[in-house]
Image 1: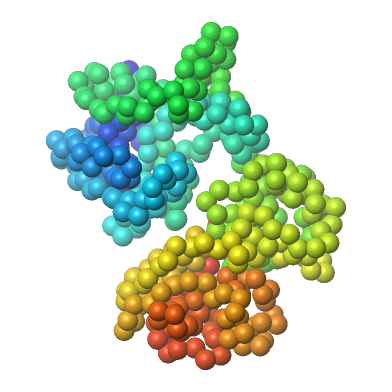
Image 2: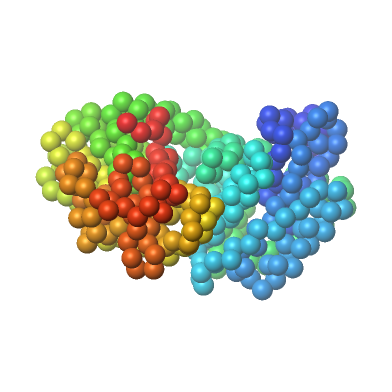
Length: 426
């Protein structure tokens, strides 16, 4: 059983926030998070306000009922509860898509409500399971490293206080409180990889390959990843120029001088930020790219939604216009939205809704000649543009207005979200 001191230590990182959100699905781990966080908040002076959030992914018929059940449990603890609904869930959505939608919904709500952090219930078992799943795929340091106890999603802190606590320990805490929780029926279905991995872990434990040892190795690899990340961030600060138009230039000679693992991390960060993709290319492809760039790139190539083009002394990474499949987006006065996972677009005093889509290769000529001569054509074609139905109004990115920009676009602004590390724009 966890002592009061254990619980205090687990939740101590929450004290620097005035309001935190507990991500609770109703399963055993997240129900324990809600119960233990509530107990902790009752026992300390000036605790943060706790808000319980449940995401309804709309992927199973019973999901709404389960979310409402969590609300009843939260109400019994006098905790406010909100259900966040993924209303645009596509049929057959992948786990990666559901995860992105979940964290985006949580972060958007947190920002709107002045909540400083989202708290999740990932456990040591999750660390071990993920380690083994990724080991089976031949993952490198990034994949095998333990998840961090604190990260961020779209500017909102994400805390994971239970990474050193086993799932069994949390169940024991719930049993001691005669608490109930929901069992996800998919946890017993062998067609899911994580279920098969959980069963394999029990067999491996008989050979001495225990969950605890895997967690230990994952934690050591996390330290190694942090060192590599620091080296990658230092390189990005000194040798990469970020354009507000959503592309970057890298010092080619400096990149060739990096240790291979650091170069791979730099390339991964750049591809994710510029390419607008949910996931980075597979490690093998990143390794091949690093080798090509080290040997000297002679012609443009594409990878991860990016065009990679050699210029004298530099490498240019742009969004690949032909791979741009951003969902149709309509913005109304006062609304803010993320477009292509690259640009945050804010509209203030519009008179009418506008449609957001790529400028496109055919419309690049509407930009001033000086802009066209200074910036790569693929990057310009991939800029966000505003349309009234099919009529082009303008480009809301500062410094990239059309020669004949519609006055209404002055009420909109688009900013490239650089999340590749370093200090930002040139």
